[in-house]
Length: 316
Image (cartoon, rainbow, N blue to C red; front, side, top):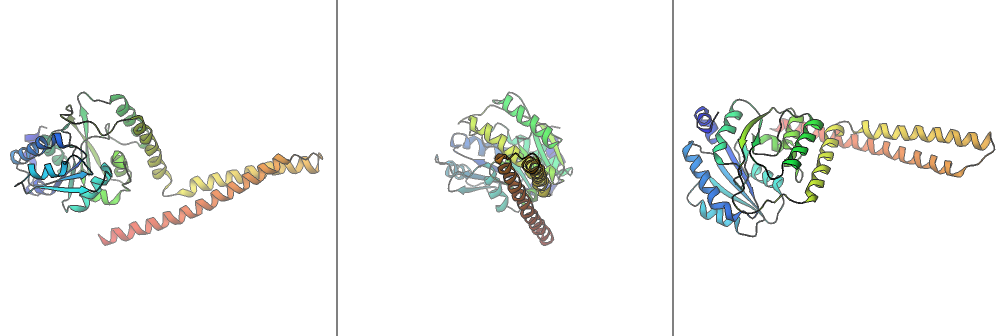
């Protein structure tokens, strides 16, 4: 389905009940084209949603330039962060600033064009909670992206092939998910784990028109792997932390008892004293009981979190 066909299917409510969220860090060179193409797309497809550009601590006048380029266009709003907080925080800032039902997360570098927006809105109108794009075309980091997407599919069993691309989703999802720093990369994973429906559309990837990528460096690869591990741990044990800490604690306590029995036998039956075994018993028992204590406290925190979630749902 092309953009024109998708736009023709949109209801009057869908045409205005959305906000395009654009995190931007030092993107001044591309801002004139970005605003111009967004305005043209809104006019061509008869869209009346919001465009929220979040200047994430830019030092090149990105926010000011966006306001000048969008002068007279009432659909555009520019929000600012005092410093660079990150893409996840920019998404949260925009979600808190709008009352529109649906959000479209759109990159400022124009590697995806505004013509894609109607296709995402059409999928949301079909009833999907999250729609993510599957990139078609040459990609600057195919190996890293491919490995990350493959690992995520295997670890989290998400029904899509590309997790880091243009997205559209219900705003309420942002309010429900634990949106920690850089966890926008796991938005689809977290949403799927909460039972939200997820779909995918093919979108064309274009070369960056100006500026440089903000996602480079070996540290980001390491950071991404650590975040993946954190999300896996959260999803697996957040509801039942005692499974991990309790099992580990009991295992160490039982092992300590076994080693203690061996030490007792050697000392009082064989008449052989072996002090390192005593130290090992003390270590195993201490760590085991500490893990049990951590597990109990984690269960209390999990129960408190569940109660807070229940109250929040009742207040909606």
